[in-house]
Image (tube, rainbow, N blue to C red; front, side, top):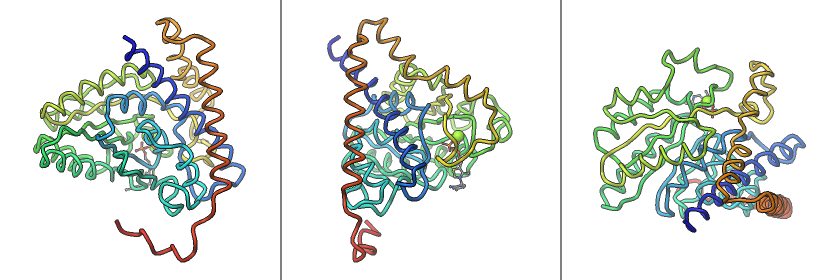
Length: 319
Ligand SMILES: Cc1ncc(C[n+]2csc(CCOP(=O)(O)OP(=O)(O)O)c2C)c(N)n1
Ligand SMILES: [Mg+2]
């Protein structure tokens, strides 16, 4: 029970860390302090957190253009992430990757990715490697509803199913691909139903319920570790901010955003933890304060770090 309690508190801390990181990034981006593009994860914290809580340090994840939450949930350090977003030498990619190329192979983080659905074949490769090496490593492959209409989804999931690979596909159905609503681009209610076409299990869960995600992905991870092949887990959720941090969301009704904000996964989980007597109001306030301090320091670290030297422009281009 002690371990279980620690785990739940850790999951709560991760969700707060993601939200605090993202909202600070939004602020700094809006102020012009972060170059390039950022795609924020606020509202979707329960997915990355619940899914990655099933992984160990040796397992892999592939991510997307909306990757900050995935990295944090897999153990990415917020100071090195922030420095990378600022384009600084101390960042995960020495300041040359930015938000959409954040990666840490030592933590099994095979990279954020600016190409929609491109993580799917990479996850297949990582899972095939684990299988050939005879390890029990699992690969979690995150992607959005939009990616499920890309050909890489069909090819990648079909091949992984045929090869019985230890991979778990986590679809974050946040209802939109940029400004295109999922109902316009897909004629089935639950994308996870597509699993049947590949002969693998598929499940749709409330993606704002961290414990539901944890459980569904947990079952899929267990199957994968036992050599029983891939699973598709669809998590229904919502992104609070625009497609990217500067998007005015003119295609979304204000009421819709308000409705989803009422389903905020963080206070929802906090309430559950209070009811379970795992967390007190005082604990929650302490966690908020610790994380605020951590993110403040991450920004200071990023601001104070040097830019990469011009001579480094052609180094680390290829691994
Ligand atoms: C192959 C490819 N096609 C199109 C784009 C442009 N694009 C960037 S993000 C995006 C939408 C992705 O939607 P979804 O998969 O639902 O992820 P979300 O942004 O909702 O997290 C598109 C079409 C791209 N980056 N790569
Ligand atoms: Mg989407």
